[in-house]
Length: 411
Image (cartoon, rainbow, N blue to C red; front, side, top):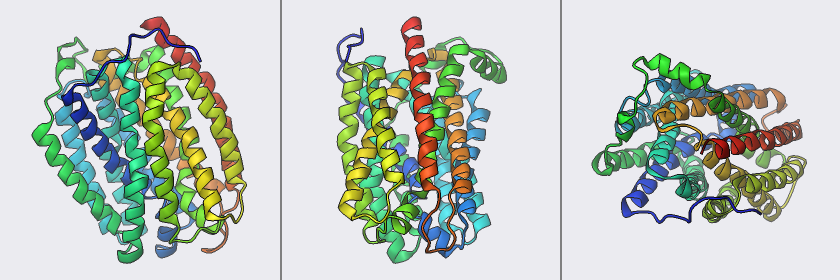
């Protein structure tokens, strides 16, 4: 691997560590809210009598509403203190998640997921804008690594606990747990985070919609947007059906499912900081390419598996997480380096919106491809999703290569 021509690693200040922790905690709750739909998928489809298409729509509704919210807020994202913006949307996310737990029908659940998406889907982009404001590119790989640990933590702690609660007190209980945790985090954000207003000193358009349009018109930014969208199309397509595939095809029991998610999550917590450090010291594009090839091999293997012992399923899932996380950290570090400071809020909002839209479309398409004849029958055509993911993974390599070149040309 070749080293990038960047200055040596810069140490974090104590406040930077605190901010990373707070942002990682907010990401943990938002990711868990989205991620928990997958392990609860089999239970929801059985108890609410949902078809695979209806479940796919309920997952996709969150992402599509998040897209609309992100686009509508993009023009205003650089006009406010980022802390206040984060608090506003986090409060809305908490209320939406509460509504999810109170849902008693498919229509109510669908409406709740739309509300949660309108607020929760924007939080990631605000967090990324905060990261870009507070951390130079030499630190960003490590920051992304720690931020994405929320993904692993949701599997180590959140999902197993959620599955335990749902097995004993119903599928609604994980949402109530998330509401309680998020409320505590909200109070910490209010009390401890400093205002983030440096971007307000940068000159920007007087008209918010003109600012949005000028951001979209930027050719370099559009390449970043397309790269993120393609990453999400491939990444979200398999995820909603993870628990249903494990239970109905691999013959993993409901009692074993928390173990599967927990072990894969622990592996993620170990992998993420390592990849973060590597992406700061080595060539990010090389790491992404190797991780993509690794993921392609594992995805093809996994989606073609039948009834399998738990220990083998665990090993394959860990291998798949290595590929997924190995792509996520360097790709986000490169894409976030594209926008100028006065465009970061708008860029991150649009980028996150397209990510959510692509993920929503992928979930809906997945629901149309995957078929389950009865509540207890195996999922059919899951391997087809795997082959589609492979195609997108190859496209992602070429697109991120363009982003990498643009970053070197403009910095």
